Image: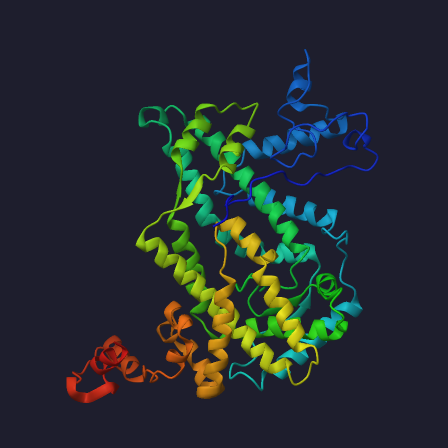
Amino acid sequence: MSDIPFGFGVPPEEPEEGDDSRKPGGSGGSRGPADPFGFGGQNPFGGPGGDNPFAAMFGSLNPNELGAAFQQLGQMLSYEGGPVNWDMAKDIARQTVAQGAEGGSKDVSVGAADRAKVQEALRLADLWLDGVTSMPSGAASAVAWSRAEWVEATLPVWKELVDPVAERVGTAMGDVLPEEMQAMAGPLLGMMRSMGGAMFGSQIGQALGTLAGEVVGPTDIGLPLGPVGKAALLPLNVEAFGQGLSVPEDEVRLYLALREAAHQRLFAHVPWLRAHLFGAVEGYARGIKVDTSKLEDAVGRLDPSNPEALQEALQQGMFQPEDTPAQKAALARLETALALVEGWVDAVVHAAAAPHLPSAGALRETLRRRRASGGPAEQTFATLIGLELRPRRLRDASRLWASLTDARGVDGRDGLWAHPDMLPTASDLDDPDGFVHREQLDFSELDRILGEAAGGHVQDVPRDEGKGGSEGKGDEEK
């Protein structure tokens, strides 16, 4: 588990050109305390001021920034939406992207040449995948995104992922006050929720902006973050990924295009998979509890001129998973589902790439190590929902899918995605050979019975009819 489930920390600075007050040795002097709301290096809620109340409240902001600070503060306190201020999250993510990635590269609009290269790579990737999977192409279009375009395109899905966990905070903030005070504390509760939504928005925006500087497409975390049927790559990040690998750029692009195209096929042709994954995330989120004693202490010391107190409380491990059988089952379900998706993609892509790309093996291992070392996708996922994936499961799942291909062929392997109950479980990942050589279950008779039941034409099936009937299948499964 992540020690700081929601990654509350210092958001990025936003220096203005020509503003020396933000630079070391500038007229602004030393930097103020950490700013939780993205106003820049100075803290609008504290700092030096002497007898000047505006200086005391807004530090050393220059006049040009003062109006913007008031406007942003007003937007923060007037927010009445859900648990996360997503408008603020998008603005901060775009600002983070504009500042450039950690390596110093700046976001740029995608040119015609790069767009053509991405489209050709995704077209060729789909062609190669036709020979190694029974699932047809899942992409209706192929696009090349800038980092800012990735933020815009994936934000709706991040909202689905993060809101269930963030909702726990909003509920807890109202519960910490005694019942007799809640009726009289409407304005205070509203302000607290607005501040909480702003803090979530600030931190999530920063995290997504940072992630946009490193991901190569919309499926890097094994979830479909982009629009349905739209395969995409980020040319700038694809180029950065290949630096130092001693692999030709076109091979890197093709290998990453194979991974994107494989994800698109899986999510397009397994209709229940998206809901299954997002349901697992939500089920896990329901089991996260808030340490109300820390929140009560923060609320008791809440000072509108010092909102860092609440943020500091949030930084001190306020979110913890419940140690219950239900929560453990939700965690196992989510980890296994994500591992199966990534393992299938890993196995299928290797089968497609190996005959064509001399560096396929090296690229495969590079991506595996990137995941195992806590790459950007896993770290951001852990930051936003308090969960770290188990990279060990990804390798286990890849081996299992490869073994299934050898034992049952491509159709037999891909046929397991027909129903969630047919997929391997966490225990099957521990014993892949046992699952591969287990007698295959036949759900056709059960599907027929369920169909007849839905139409009101149920017929009794004799118990001794064998494995073709529902009773026999249940015994077989046991």
